[in-house]
Every structure is written in structure tokens, then in C-alpha cells.
Length: 196
Image 1 (cartoon, helix red, strand yellow):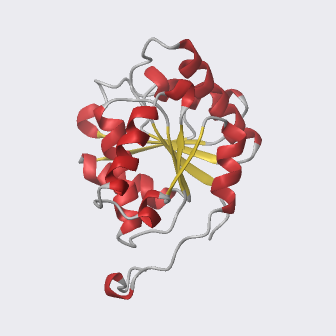
Image 2: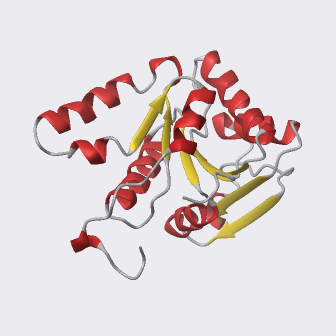
Image 3: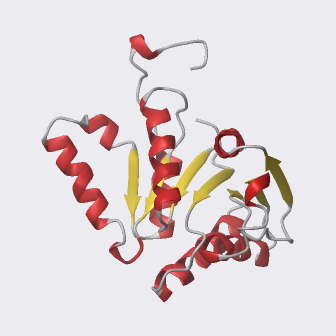
């Protein structure tokens, strides 16, 4: 695997009502900068998104924001980013974020955050990338989701090896260590293509 020198963070454009989530998002941003890991994210200055970015920027880290044109006003673009990339569509945004990143971390968020997480893990399952995917389970936010995934395994809808593609921890340093130690599984022959 390539060096983990850029991580895409998926998270909410709202702050929610748990102050621990807000503060941990900022700390994650700080830690990425301290480890010389570029933050790739959705470019907003609001919500959890803004906290992660500000944590990185306050430690003189590099932050790349990627946003589709139609969201520029709604999500209020952060003006202090190292680089801002504008796309035409949401799909282009996700593709660009994936291309720019050597790993992914999901923080608390809503529908959009879950959609990003499940798309990137599906791409991994299909052999379209072999990058580590982390879930930072702050304050047990994702306990119910993890229970659902375990139920999918028990009922035969999700293979255990695909479930294990999701690296989970509630501590930032431990999650980053798991991601650095990640070894991708072999892509099944029937999925192999020129892209893998």
C-alpha cells in the first residue's frame, strides 16, 4: 500500500448537539497535520466538516477541499484552504476525493456521510481500490450501525471479509495505526480488471 499521506474525511455539514463529537473532529484535524497527512474533505467551513479543516489548518497542515459548483453557496466554502477544487456533480466530487486520498475516515454525519461511506466501501469490496477505510466511532455514535452490519453478516447478506474492510475505533491514534497497518485482501479473480 502507498504511504498514508492523504486522508479523505467524510462527515456532517452540521455540528449536531454532542460537544464531544465537535471537539474530537477538531483534534482529528490537528493530528492529521502533526503526522503530515493531507486532509481531503468537502470544502465547507460549517459543521463537523469545518472543525476538522480548522484543526488541520491551525497546525499548519495541508487541506484540499472538493465541492460541486451548486453547493458552493449552500455549504459556505472555507476561504483558508490550501487548495479548492470545484466539480460539476456530486459523483465527480467523490471520484476526485477518492483519487486524491490514500485512505478514508468517517466521522458522525447524516445521509450524505453514510452515502459516502457506503459507496467507498462498496468500491473496495468490488476491487476498485485497496485503501484503508476507517470509522471513528465517537461517543458510540455508530454503535447501532455496527450492530446492523453484524446482523447482515449473521443473516448471510454480508461476507465477514467485507465487513472487516471497515476499520473501527473510538480513539484517533489507534484508528490511524490500524489504517497504517492495513493490508488489502486479494481481489477475487472474477473481479479483476485493468483497473486493479
